[in-house]
Amino acid sequence: MPVVAGVGALATRDVLRHAEDAQRAGVAGVLLAPMSYQPLMHDDVLGLYRDVTAELSVPLVVYDNPGTTHFTFTDELYAQVAGLPRVASIKIPGVPADGAAAARRIQTLRKLLPAHVTVGVSGDAFAATGLNADCDAWYSVVGGTLPEPALRITRAARAGDAAAAAELSAQLQPLWDLFARHGSLRVVADIAEQLGLAGHPCLPMPILGLRDEDRARVRHVIEQLDLR
Image (tube, rainbow, N blue to C red; front, side, top):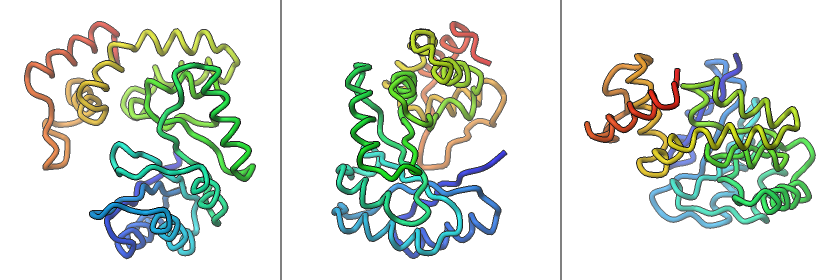
């Protein structure tokens, strides 16, 4: 099973150290989001990816997550970073909810990016729309803990059955609603705990798990959707 490891840190020297450690451990690739204590600018981010890719021997996934990093990629920066060696994929932060608009967005990106650089949708509620709009991949939160629902959506979209993919995603709307309310990390961590896949608490401090009343709501959704 190929493993892609995240290697983010606040300073480039630490990113490089994490990347080297990951490569020695045998990862198939690394994923990097631009993180910093100070707000980053275009040239800062381009320089980060240039420095890291120069030291890599494995493929790199560019992680665009403005909600976490507070940095927003421009299409110009996408194109510049994608032109660096060993950049293999860009994890975009969702797509428009309208299917036609999503398809236009992916078409625009494909015109900017080298043919070998894939486009992966992020944000699990957007996955069916993104895959139906011709995204190459779904960088899923839920897929690592509950692979079967993610596989059903992905396989339907890959088979060209856009309606089935959309319907399968719609069936998980109670889960997507929990993600929107509490954040996907806390919800999936709580699911893993309640299914016995992880101890309680499993999140790294200082991130706290859900409160008891919210854990009860997660438990209800697990039972409602028969998540296993």
